[in-house]
Length: 239
Image (tube, rainbow, N blue to C red; front, side, top):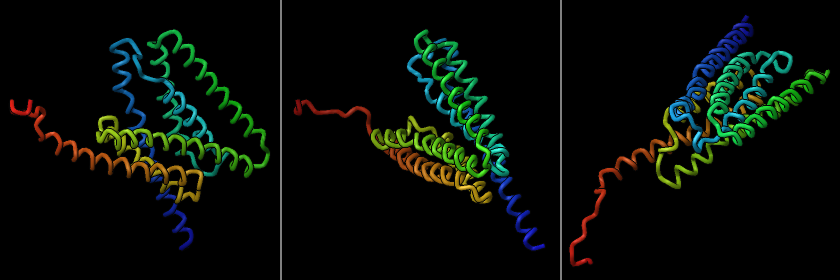
């Protein structure tokens, strides 16, 4: 009875963490909305790149596939969040295609077809693997690598923040949602004893902490700097 109670508590904690991760993920999925409002308002993609949405779509598709019962055990909340994420990315990509110039539009279509082709190869190839454990490990490693590379992308922003000493390109809500979602799925993976989930999300949690620390540090520095005079006056004798 004690063991059964412990297992039920563990399952409840895992589900709670997974549901929280699904909720916090919406902050990430909605973060490009201002960008696409601008694109639709100006009817131009300007200098914005569509590559992040292409890559995010591939990542969502692979990770959603990993969460299915035919690939891993009891990870449906991983499938739900990434399925929703894939829908968001597809919407963003089609909006981008509508307003992109012809050359960029053709390149985006080519990349989109490449993503679907690559995902089809991964999905069909995994189904051809008869041994469940081999299938699980193969897709698990692919999903883990994809998640780690996605979580590593903020390193460019972190570097930019440190160089410019400005948090202009690192919105607080985005950093916070990254931290909360990663932490939720870190706990979810731990409760489910799944290293393919808790390892990449552990990295995401660590990078989220760094982003929040940098935001706090440089946002305070920006306020201190803002009280300095914008124009320095020199006496005529300095000329």
